[in-house]
Image (cartoon, rainbow, N blue to C red; front, side):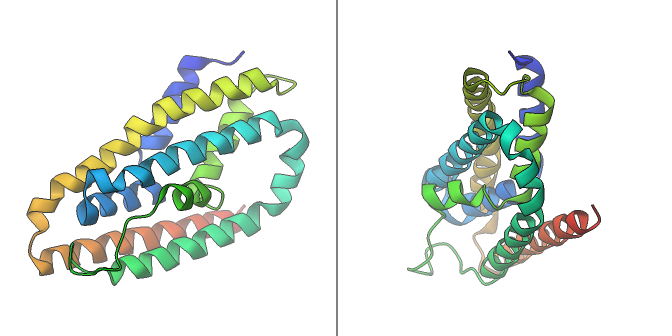
Length: 199
């Protein structure tokens, strides 16, 4: 099988540390609250778990192919993060824009397929923890464990964002927060892209 405790520890560290998902969840928590951010959180957790399940189950046969398309996935993911950071920088105050709404379940799940940090997390988990031969039961167990560890870790970020809401009631404070988070997201995208190009 796989080392469950070691994988849980690895997934916990990768899930709770800053990255595109957690920056977006904090921002969504501030702008929309925890409850409205739940579909976004669930989409991330299930999207990452499905990504891990498929990659672990097919790891031996797709490892070479993933190496070939990785630069394209990284470029697409970074471009999407830059676009999101632009949208975030232009975000209105809560309740001021009728068209503003948090990211949904499907969009968050699909985002994992172009999220560079998600790919690093999933591929490293496959390399480090998937037993030889890539058995489906082991892949399913890894994906379930990842889901159980990931969800509470990312919930901390959305909850923290919601706790910041009362501090950001004034337009200037929320605008400053959104600009700061947009800058962090853009910097993350550029750092990931440079890191990918340096490989």
